Image (cartoon, rainbow, N blue to C red; front, side, top):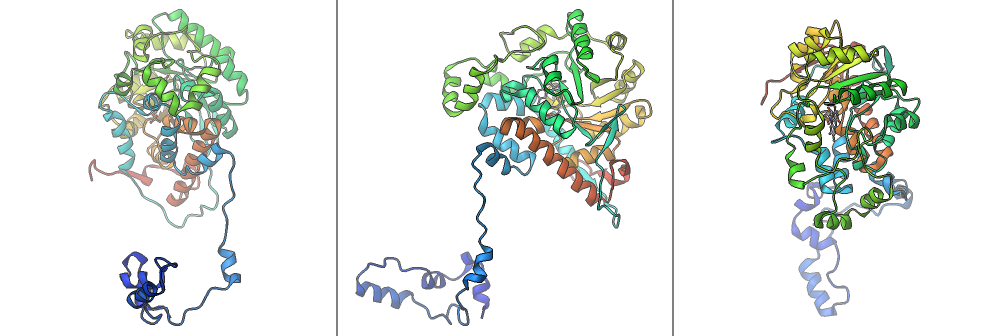
Length: 456
Ligand SMILES: Cc1cc2nc3c(=O)[nH]c(=O)nc-3n(C[C@H](O)[C@H](O)[C@H](O)COP(=O)(O)O)c2cc1C
């Protein structure tokens, strides 16, 4: 019979139980020593609550034995251990050199904008509706006239081949497989045409930074149109480069320079270095080679004199859907739409530009109220969970963009890592919808979500 003492966890059982029934300290000790040990330590079964027990039968034991299937592929093995985006981030941190991880993971100055954006999702309070039939859920939505199977897209990210040698190619293939829209950055490391060839069936957007040299910008727009990109995303929060202190301290250049510390790093991350040195050189696809840091490049090429008049210029040369990314205020959202934008992306650039900026989730509803009837409102920055996407949609966003979430997957396992990130977000989103009692994205509304007061 099981007595109360035996039911206690092992580490709380009295020492004499542990000593009495485990093992003899030295089976080859002398007989005398053995007798002394027995007299000191041995306890009768009744004393330790084992009376009435029996040995298990093999037939009972066997069904409990379920040996794990051995996974020989190391990437697959790694990715199987990732159940959340945070898990992918942990794996990523071990896969790439410190400066590369920091470039991706880091944000501007004190990184307050990024922390604030992530914390705003912790302020979300869901209000589920009970007894709805959620046996089937539809995560699909329509963005700028196109049907998306999930309400998120991959955000534009520069230097993606630094995170993994297959970079944008891996990401766009994974995006195509999942039906997710992929956005190529002006600072991409794969060209507009190569991406179009790589994944002809994927929905693709092109993100534009307006150069001081307008003719070069116009050329990119024309190439994007010719290659079949569906929408143009103009990023407007980059008048000058944000101060990304991790990059400054790491002395990051693109491509990373071979210094004593990077040579040492090569010993710890040999696969990353071998891939870097044995594949196509890591350069920007849309501009000629740049010898300096990212901040120096941004400050030399980007035009800080950009105004809404340039949006009119762009509207004149791009006839397809046009989104303005990096909107922080209601007034700017209104002005962007007045100047011809079909959509605005409420975004703080992943916290990588202005530090201490407002959290996008916290200004989303006023922006939706101001322009939602004339334009589509999207949101990014800080999304680490599918439930974050659901919260943004309930507060009025049409869809979200995810940046680091897919980059962590890319660093953790290349194309399969991006697959994993998309699958994790989709699964989390579907579960959140079902637990909220919503059968589809269209059923979400503000009654499903409120934001707790900061700090409560
Ligand atoms: C490594 C990295 C590079 C980025 N490069 C660009 C870029 O070239 N153009 C751009 O508009 N946004 C860029 N962004 C910002 C993203 O498009 C997006 O706004 C941001 O990543 C969203 O925040 P999240 O990473 O928390 O999802 C970059 C973000 C990261 C993390």
